[in-house]
Length: 424
Image 1 (tube, rainbow, N blue to C red):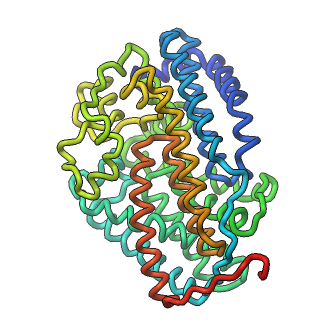
Image 2: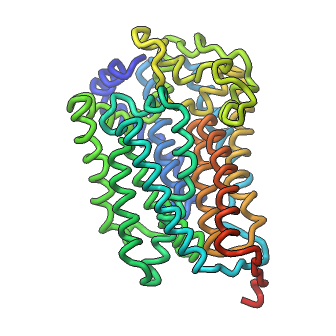
Image 3: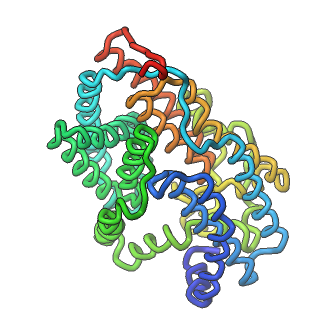
């Protein structure tokens, strides 16, 4: 089922859709109440997107567009994923028993360095490849300039650091101009990127500073005045994209992002399209986003991404296009192992929560390590949406961890001062 067909179905059964959405909310309410820490928590956002995604199979089953067998599999697979997820999930971030004494002078230097890198790399990307917001598909922007894609990986931590540290600067009333300048720069680049979610980095940076570092939960009331700004961002993105795509397609993409967040489900299971997706080497496919950046495998030898294959199956006229839906865990589980995908999803849940919480727990607490913990926490949530995205994030974390260590030692020097929390 293609997007156009789905939206015809949606328009003809709009009341049914909202009933299914309500059911999905109820099914996920426990996770939201038990395991999220305020509305700025990246996990809160991911669960909202999961609610929207999981509304789709309920809606498709209600309208008779997927089989009972497929529907039951999806329900069990999702249940097993979140069961595995909560086994390693913690209600609060924990560090070891030491405190790293921050060298704020060094951290100031890192802030200005990372802000400069962010601006320079983005300008290089936009002048060389183009501005994604004005492209037909921003996902294909590096197709003819693959080497430049590494710039996006190299700035994933620098911009997270800049945004989070800006909240610290504002809190301490220090370098206020540069803190607000960093916010403005990021908003501009977010609009030019064509992505509706990059502006959420402001929210996640705020979560990192207020909750992970200061231990305060952010309530809806405390940030109510900023909500209109966050709502305006996707609207402005729509206006920019309409210049390239036209209003109808631009609006359809915006609507699809929120209503049809689980587009992979309506492309996979109606008409049994999922059975036509072929993965020859399960191991290399799963680890491909780590293996090919390290040149352990050749990109041309890898199986085609599941989302791309589904797009070509549903839209044969655009065969070879480099875009498609995210492959949510139940879909990938079925492609790789059929009913064994239930176990696969459980393991995926374990992996997600383990990587979100456990590696950073060996670190001493400081502003620097809290920023790093927030970065890892945010990126590892990519496994919720797509294991390929999660694996790519592991490579990004590995790469940026090395950069952070080198840069910090350069500005701070080799001496690192640790104290016991009891003495702090």
